[in-house]
Structures are given as structure tokens and as C-alpha cells.
Amino acid sequence: MKGKNILFIALVFAIALVVYVAVFLLIPFEKNISSWLSFGFTVFAVCAGACITLYAFNRKTATSKFYGFPIFKIGIVYAIVQFGAGFIICVISAFAEVPYWISMILFIIIAAVFAVGLIAASGTRTAIENIEEQTDSQSKTINTFRINIQGIVDVCSNNAVKPSLAKLAEEFRYSDPVSNESTEELEAEISIKVNDLRRAVVNNDTGSANALIFELNNMLSERNRICKLTKSK
Image 1 (cartoon, helix red, strand yellow):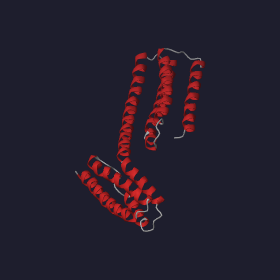
Image 2 (image 1 turned 90 degrees about the vertical axis):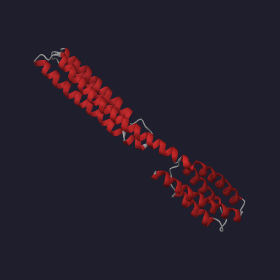
Image 3 (image 1 turned 180 degrees about the vertical axis):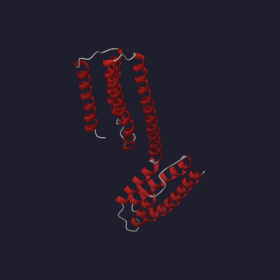
């Protein structure tokens, strides 16, 4: 959700709060403890809804923002339900005595139910974010290789090397993106070979470049086998 949309929603909450406070204070009906409890909890619910909206969409990644929608809905629904319950209590209190403890228990239960929902939704998003962060970290190595190999392809002008080099770039592009502890040693060797390949291409050393491309293809195949085996365990 864009910043302008969030600002618009926050503005809607603010307007709703001002209108509610004005209506509650200006309408001349008898206000007892239950009425004031309704007023206090409803004001809290509207403020909480605005804060929950900001919390729901304060992440940078698209995935986090997507999982912020359930959190956002909780804030909206809580404000609406509390407003409805508070309105009913106020109307009843204007014509009959409503024990304050009934109102208090009702409003606390409503707040508690939505608090549990908020905690559950936040926990789900946090778990998704942790998985996403871990995946990004584990794919950092292969992404670096892809960028480096593509950079070598771009500077290569040797027609005896470029086709096989471009094919190697494709192999890196479609290789397993997730690294693990078992691939660390091999990936360190691949990194050295990639640097050697860059030097060979820059120096227009056809023999060394082709030999390094052959080695890197084999090393990349071995890495992919390791990745496959470690995932199957």
C-alpha cells in the first residue's frame, strides 16, 4: 500500500474520531458510567485502528506488506465492532440503567479477542519475514556469481570464447539459488575460478578462458548435486 493510501486511511480514522467525540458530547442524553466507558473504549478502538494500520504497512518488502492486510483488517473490524457495541450501550443507558461492570466486561472481551487476532496475524507475518530473510541470505552467493559471470560476458569480445561463456552464464542463471553449509567450500573455489576467468577474458587468453569455463561448468554441476542431496535428507 502506498504512502498516500495509508495517509488517507489515517485521515479517515481521524475524521471518524472527531465526529464521534463531537456527537457524543453534543447530543443531550443522560451519560452514566456505562456511557463514559463506551466513549473511552470507542476512542481507544479508533486510535488503535489507526496505529494498527500504520503498523500493518510499515514494512519495505512486498511480501510483508501483503501479509499486513490481515493485520489492517483486524484494526478496522475492531474499531467497527467496538463502535457498534458502544452505541448500543449508550442507547440502552439513555433509557435504562446498565451496570457498569457489564459494559466493562463486554468491552474488555471485545478488545481481548481482537488482541489475540492481532498477535496471531503479527506472528504469521514475522515468520514469513524470517523465511524470506533467510532465503535472501542463502541466495546471495549464487546471485553474486550470476552478476559477475554476466559482467564477464558483457566485456568479452573473443568469438572463440563468448558462446561457451554465454552458455555458462545460463547455467548459473538456472542453477539452484539456495546455498547451504555443504556448498560453502565449493563456492569459495568457484569464486576464485570466476576471478581467474575474468582475468583470462580481459587478457584475451582463449585457452585459459575455455579451460576455466569447462572447470566452472563441472563445479557448478557438482554444487547443484550437493544442493539436491542436502534437500532430500
